[in-house]
Every structure is written in C-alpha cells, then in structure tokens.
Image 1: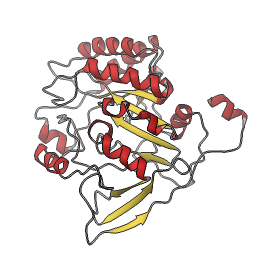
Image 2 (image 1 turned 180 degrees about the vertical axis):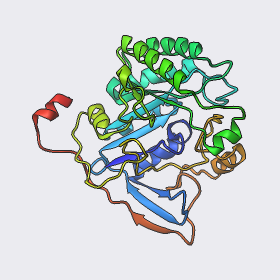
Image 3 (image 1 turned 60 degrees about the vertical axis):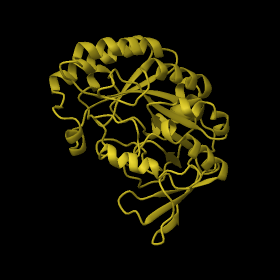
Length: 314
C-alpha cells in the first residue's frame, strides 16, 4: 500500500524528528480530521508499505536522516514557486530549497523526486511573463535532478479567499498561454509536465493530464509494478491519484502561504503546532478517552511476478 504524508501538512519541513521516531518504533496513529474520535493505526514496515510519498516546500530537515528510510521506496514532491515572502512568509529562500532539492535527488534518485510548481496565480506582480521567466530559471537549475514537474492553477477555496483577499481565478486564455509555454520550457530541459486536477484542456501541448500520483506515475518512480486492489476510487474528482492513507493533520503547516487550502487561520496552526509532541504516536496531541483505534488494512501491492513490463519500468 501507499502511505501518504503530504496532502494536509508538511511533515518533512516541521515534523521530521517525529516521523523518524515513528519509523524507529514501527507504527503511528492518525486521527480522522472529520471525526476526531476515529483513529487509524498504521504499521511503518516496508513489508506492507510499498511506498512513502512526501510533499514538502522544505526537505532540508529530513536530509540527514535519509539513510534511516533506505528500507522504504520513496517518492518526493518538492514545491518550488516564484513567490515572495508576502505570499509564502515562512518558506525558506528559493535558492536554499533548490539546493535541498538537488541533495535529495542525489540521495534517492532523480526519478523519485518531482518538482511542483503550483499553485499558479496571476496578479500585477506575478504576471504570465514573470512566471515564464522564473520557470525557465528554475527548470534550468533542476535539469538532471528531476524528470517531472506538476503544475496546477489556484483553486478558490473559502479558506483561500478569506486569507488571500483580492485573489482571482486564472482565466482560460491565460491557462492556455501558460500551459503551452511551460510545456515548451520544461521539455527543453528534459522535464515532463503533468497537471494536477485541471482536466484535459492542456493535453494538446503534450502535458500529461492524467494525474500527479497515479499508479502509472508511482510505478515509474519506484521501478515496480503495483497491483492496486480493485474498486479503489480516485482520491479526487477528475483524476486517479492514489491519495488515500494520509497520515497528516490539517491546520498544522507553519509555512503560512496565503493560498493554502489546508489551514483555517494562523492562530489555529500555532495552537496545533504547540500541541505537537515528537514522542507521541499522534502527529498532533495525544490519545483521548473517547477515541476508537482501528488497524489499517495494509498489504503489499507489489507485483512479485517478473514480466516484460517490469523490465520496461526499471
């Protein structure tokens, strides 16, 4: 099975010590964000966890401990955007993130590290032309360290509109201009472009619109075929990404990005971060007397039979 860490928070950036302790102890407890009394126990063992997926804006705190993850297959999505501190107030300097990206790629392999350039939004500062210039510079810097980049355009969640006054949707004609030119730039640097939950409108430019964490994408990243159990529904509308089994918690990411969909407000985030205990099996807080713990259904999805397709993936 796939164990996801990054749809709700940024574990590498803020909770690396906790995660490595969970690996050492071999399990963790994840609270249902919509029904907090429901808790799932996950075994952190390579026999049943076929792949760990990380999504982060700052992999640096995890780098020194990466040898402890060698028993696990890993896929990393590292976000590097062109925005300033007025938009991403607590994200490290871009040059530092690019350097960490390269170090991570050298450690786990370039096919296991994806670049995320999203969400894309436009205003008087961050124009189409600005995005194209910055994307060109970043693609040049990351050439040879990744072979895939994921883009998406800003979604106007209620949280986003409240925390980011004046933000607007990216218009179709702007999306087409960006998509065509970003695909051209990425291709020139040996990088394949994917979209995340954007439909098929950019497919004519050679962009893969099938999803950013599909079975096929993960197979190519880890070099193994996955026999995903039948009946598993796509994690989100319009794509077939395998985003279940997320161990994170909403309202716990400290980056403070104005466009974030996972945080309600800064005060809630600070309160939750203060409740974090690196020694606890829970990411935030501890056990509750009314909670019900169930064991996750965990089994390997790796296809153990060698086939021509297997060799093609390696």
